[in-house]
Image (tube, rainbow, N blue to C red; front, top):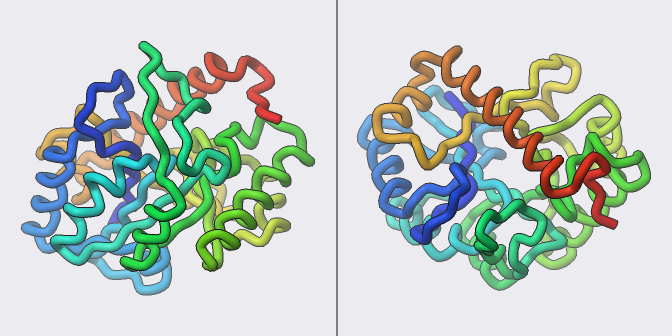
Length: 253
């Protein structure tokens, strides 16, 4: 069964394809449950695998997750995993390319505490959402260590997993993750190295253009090669976001 990756569950208009509406999200959850699937956190997916379990993850940690996705999932007693950008908690998403100057706020610490108390898993999406493969070794280690340390201190939890910004990782980044104390990580389509498998668990993104039919295909692993190819193309497009926002250096210091 797949690991699904959502980003923004938001009714307000945005040009980003990573947005799904609350109605769209609710219909997808209902469809999966009707088909006999269950949704679990990443930790449950890894340590208690089941043929009918789908890991439900959210990247970036937008406040709309608490406002819109959380109530929908609470109705079904579903817990999920959210990967947060520790340096942007409670702030607007200045790290992203926002066409039309549309900004969205990230989850606050009280909102994250509420999710944690409800059984959600809170993990790292780095400190400032820099592409970790484009920054130097010391800067990368700082992103990894500080993100983990901040989340653990504020929420009094243990952070074990990372979702790599823009889905990008390499051998050096994985080594630094291990040095920083992470146990594993998730990507989108770029996780084929068996040596780094714990840090390269692949996911399928759910996007604005996914209707009930394509969502069902993804959770049933139907036309799997086609959807993985589409995911690779979307990952390549995300690299363009890096260049537009940060230029070749892609560095926030």
